[in-house]
Amino acid sequence: MTAALHPDTLAVHGGRSELSALGVHALPIDLSTTNPLPDIERGGDSYEAMATGGRPPADGSMVYARLWNPTVARFEEALAELEHTEATVAFSSGMAAMTAVILAHGPAAGKHHVVAVRPLYGGTDHLLGSGLLGVDTTYCAPHEVASALRADTGLIVVETPANPTLEIADIAAIVAQAGEVPVVVDNTFATPVLQNPIDLGAAMSLHSATKYLGGHGDVIAGAVACDERTAEALRRGRAVTGGLLHPLGAYLLHRGLTTLPVRMRAQQESARAIVQWLIDRPEVAEVFYPGLDGDPEGILRRQMRGTGAMIALRMRGGYAAASAVTSATTLFTHAVSLGGVDSLIQHPAALTHRPVPAEARPDADVLRLSIGLEHVDDLIADLAEGFAAIARGVQGEDQSFGSATVPVTSRSVGMRSRL
Ligand SMILES: Cc1ncc(COP(=O)(O)O)c(C=O)c1O
Image (cartoon, rainbow, N blue to C red; front, top):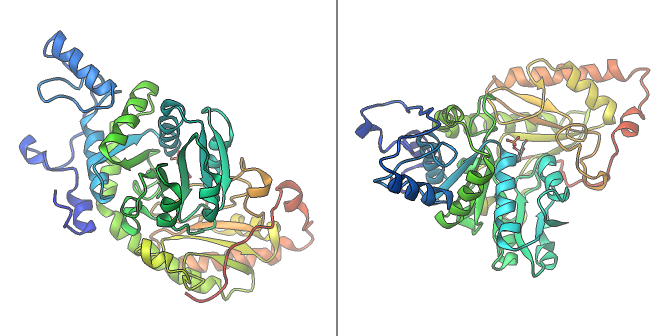
């Protein structure tokens, strides 16, 4: 399909080019785990092609669903179009996707070092530091990437906007520091609706597809958009390690893509209104949202087409206040995850970022909001209810409880101003 189409159109039509020839209109779900082989030779050739990361030959077979599945492949094609690249490789989760990226660019490529720009999603930070995948990781700030590189650096990992406090890293500037080393950008928060890292020189755009791509909180999945050569290495890893996406999940993700641009715009509009409301609230010490500093270096203008629907906030009453709010909201479900049609609230230090070392963990007074598709007035009223519970909950409570149980750090990059 031509890249000149608008993203809204690609989101609806991507990955569907063969449906007319198949005589169907809705996306078919192929649940076959195994596939007929035309003969031993062509079956063997097909196996060889896919086990080494290629696609099924036209006269061959898909052989086995760990190697290839057409429902998954259609979703992959659609996301590749939205990400302005040749291919996508889908995985059973965002963490499986990150694991495949690290393995393909680390040990499998003879490299044993990764540079990771903090902050990152807690699971990614933890995976990189765990030593489980045979790589050393140097964590750094965006401007420190060049000095963190080593002869055996195989990969640079960056997340922008970052989970949970929405720091923005300049993708092109990181790519410029990287030289020949490939950069993977976790694009989960922005989605291809707001940002295309590959247009800015990144080698890979990674998603926890569990979030906005699916959009309905009913699929765990991951995806990496990249060129065909990188896709081959990732498919090889997927075939060997088995971190593949189930076709029912791929179907739901592909259907979810059709509404992604509309959902992102609507959720972002509410998020911006909620940010304006939050910055005037006495209970809130700091609001974290892209662009609140006026974008002095022009990074947002260069690399994003919007500011998204994730917000973080620092509560004036510390951990006790944060805890009171999460227990009192009703429309905002107190739950981890993000990017769905319904709004969520959660405490990063205790949950999504719990495995991060204390010096890099979000502060104990920080909450993260994922804004959904409910009416914005209802969401604001729900947050107001949550804030009203602070006064009730804090009375007589030991204020030091939170910082005693959840270690805090002093890092803070949020801003408090008007959008
Ligand atoms: C930014 C980001 N990247 C990656 C992941 C991991 O994705 P998954 O939970 O699908 O494995 C998450 C999960 O919250 C995330 O927020």
